[in-house]
Amino acid sequence: MTAPVDLSRVHVVVPNFKKRLSGVTSTIIQLVPLQEKQIGIATLGPGLPDHLPKLRWWQVPGLLRRPKTAMVRVWHARRNPEMLAGVILRDIFRAPLKLVFTSASQRQHTGWTKFLIRRMDAVIATSVKTSAYLKVPNSVVMHGIDTDRFCPPVDRAEAARQLGLDPGQLYVGCFGRVRHQKGTDLFVDAMITLLPDHPRWSAIVAGRATAEHKDFEAQLRDRVKKAGLAERILFVGEHKDIERWYQPLSLFIAPQRWEGFGLTPLEAMATGVPVIATDVGAFSELIEENVTGALIVRNDLEAMIAAAKHWMGNEVALEKAGKAALDHVHTHFQLAGEARQLGDIYHEFLGGETEDNAI
Image (cartoon, rainbow, N blue to C red; front, side, top):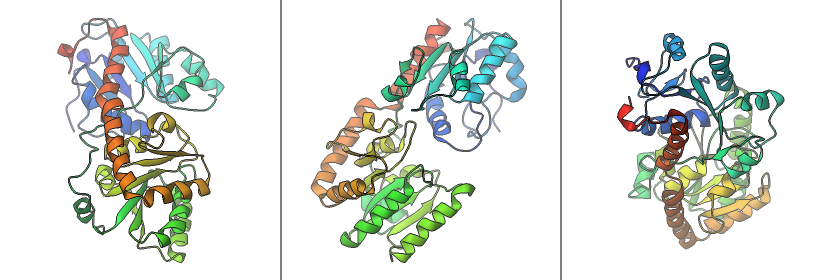
């Protein structure tokens, strides 16, 4: 376990009160190492790797004192419990905090969430669509991607071989939690329809099915087995090195029925892989239609089959779209750009805080 950070030099606190891995947790894990090079920042809570700067729970009372070189700290919440904790610290215990909330939700907020949002000092939306659901002034800061971690392989066939896959096959992937909301069943059904007519292609489903979704996954596996495709539609589970599993892909499908933001299309495009995605979350703001991939109507199996058939049957178009996808991410969705925009918001509250004060 790493030593606790020097609280007097922490100017931004990033709480993470959910132990299980989620999109929010993944965002924090990727952003904070970049942010700590620019500003004194520390996380608080379970479920985060040891290489991140962390406050210990016993240090929380120290938040009642202001840090060095600033009159306040920023408390950057991304969930309701974290907003509530910030409100309690600031309004009840009089901690010198400015509260920032990032929202990825694309649905009407509950009364409780609206109550908490109204008490924030700044609100960030992760997309233009998300911004439209907020009833308070907000700034749009879209997620970026770590293009050092997610990058094309030197040789896709060799990348497949290193994962124990057939290097002679082309692969289409669907990554994320295995559940109805994520549309995993649509992907599987599309592949059951398409693969018999596309012998050079196989499919990869990567992600975890939590306990309440184990039966859902079992039903999908059973459908695949009955179709005689168990060796070509592969369920590979959850992987911490998921970037390696993008590298053998020639096509990625994001079949979600609902999504807040959705990082998987960016992860795929950063690896030079074109993306077919449903029009949910921020996907319409990430994908250039017929340039980096295609958008389809949510929950429409026939549309997914038609789009996948088009791309799977045109390797020249796939290669061209893959290069366009890579350029698109590098131009518009670098993780460093997201960190810089967040830093600008923090500095509005912190005044003269600079990277010289970083931990």
